[in-house]
Length: 158
Image (cartoon, rainbow, N blue to C red; front, side, top):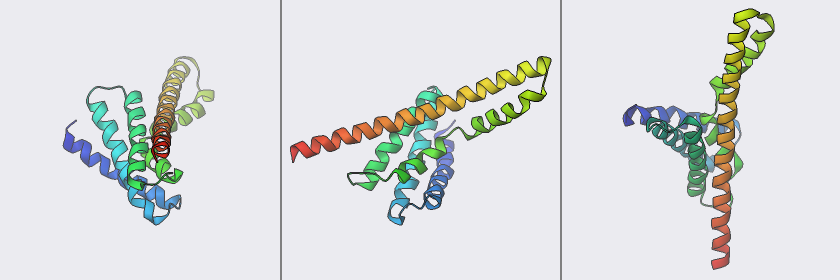
């Protein structure tokens, strides 16, 4: 995937994050930060996946990037959670989650080979969704801890 394609793909993620910020009633002064978080997260994840990093690790680092970008753009001691959540959601596993739910609904009506295939697809979708959401949680937690440690260091220096 070329850098231009990755850059172009990050724009809808940024707009999606901004839209989520509006839906989640983020204060207007934070909407630009929300858009920046969505853009940065998708850009980082796609660049890392393009560099042959696994999608779980790429998502974890992208989530950490969202937290760091949020702190840099908001420039206050505490970043409103709505900024980070709206910035993270474009990185979510919506497709895998949808496939998981659909597979779960199909399984009771199947038998034989079709049941085996549907069960394997269900487990694969569930695993992909779990790993993605775990990566988002760990990544944003790492960024939050890093920001708290930096703020603690600033407080001691002052």
